[in-house]
Length: 386
Image (cartoon, rainbow, N blue to C red; front, side, top):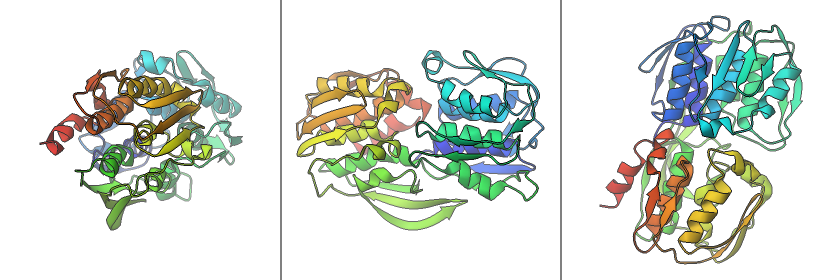
């Protein structure tokens, strides 16, 4: 599996503002993490291969130009938290897709902390010190939570975030491992786990394809990222730790219970990145699966609800698009078709899984977008289909 994208962003950012040098093995090679690396370099951080030379909490320098976050919402939102506490202003920009995504949800708590912050474009920083707050998240979001916690490193007093539902906790784990008694951060060498969201595509394929038996070594099994395994289970072996994160070797298992899922809307926040491929799985279950509580998918790299609705409908699935998800009736045999990824990496990979389950040829338009998170995805597809 590619290195965990979520942890890669956080490990780079936190080690950049830590004291000392850290070696990060197995970083994600995706374009999104490349955007974080480029922004940190522009802020004066020295990164060479897998080594980060931290500049300390107050060692960042003003960038010579706007920071280009590319397609990465994680880059923009997490850096907004760090840069909110700097004595200089930073401007963060992105591609057309990122420029349409909501940023006020990040800027509102930062303003409460006393930061200067506006959008669009995202301008933040130049007013210090910040003040600690207790912030009740209106929508479950690990990115907003992380931005507030990172800003809290530069705030006077305590900063706390209250979540309406659990979200991934990589920021909290790294802060606990890196924070010193005097409030600084010490550099932390890390071996990055394999990305569990990338693994989900293979787990679902293995659960549904009669000829699939796949081994996925070194996958992160943090409970805040693996709720999808309660729906499409996988075997676990050699469970171990990679820094503060649990890791295991996964092996796909055929799905024994093919009945439609009874969906708790609160689950959607825990499987938000896996929902496109879980929608594919639902087309093969007996009965009606009503996936709700996922309106956040409307404001991802694409409108993932609409994109998956169009793609699966073109392949013969019986589904109804909801405001916050899908109503999917199954099982329905899928047929190969020409489908559009809409430039969204998770949509492209989910439709590829659908194509592997379908009869006939499937063509995915915009297939190159998988490089955002999983550059070797299509090579893996070719390898397992030989």
